[in-house]
Image 1: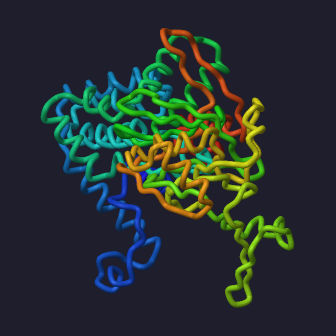
Image 2: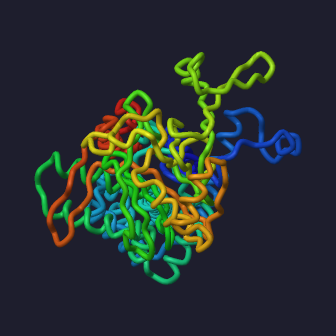
Length: 423
């Protein structure tokens, strides 16, 4: 993920005693051809030093005006409104630099702080172990974008507006901020801060049309133009087979799907009636043909991802009546799956009658959606209620809030306090 490549340089700089927090140009490993051409060095220590020198040279070339630096200081002094800690961004260093007469030192310190603040606003503060099973892609920021934003913000003297432009646009983010501002209860504040950061982990703009699954709430919502057009109950992974958080793109639906049994649970179906074994050399995998007892039910959403997680139907409809619905091996079983499929496809050729005919035929068929729809599988343990009504809390199903809060209370964003540095 790009986020961790951005952060790696911050930790790298801190570990070597350099005064700055900033970003590597990208986090991809060098190719053998690059090493052979001398573009990078193969020795990790030399490579680290090379990255530091290039980064510091880029930072040293930036020139800040004093009004712009003063505006940056004012912003970080109020960053608690975002659930972040001003002390993480060294306001005392910037204040001292403003009081001094060394413009080069002021520029370097302001650049350092801007890079760290902008990364946290766009991508979140918690990282590494603070983000358990979080694999959603967020391409809102990279170091090239950061430096360009910073240069334009200085030139236009609009540091505050530039930083605000990096924040999530979803109404929930603004509403959770209002809750944070109105409560003094520490437990509530910690819950809200954790969920504000989770919104920063997602793309700033989720799209005009998207599906968002909230695992702790056991719901999947289809959103169009900012309005929830459908909300369905879902069944999610058990704590020992937790549903990961990821993003994918839904391109269609398969009716009467086969179930390709994951290797991790193949022992559970081996020898059972109704499964087909497929040999591939010395390895055997299992498939379950379409039918009334198929684990995927009558439909599966086509949403390719590296984790084989998707939304699908289920023959176990009675489980949707339960309040706690964590029963799956990780995939997301969806109530009224055929109705959900019709909305998702948004295809006149696949109206209710056509879907019913396809299901009744018991033949596997793929229906293409008229528009590809982003799907975000997220983990929010709190949602702000409208009109200042406080929050609705959801059980922390996988015990993840504490790690996010610990990371937020760490200057580096790491869970391991001992190596996180002091404020």
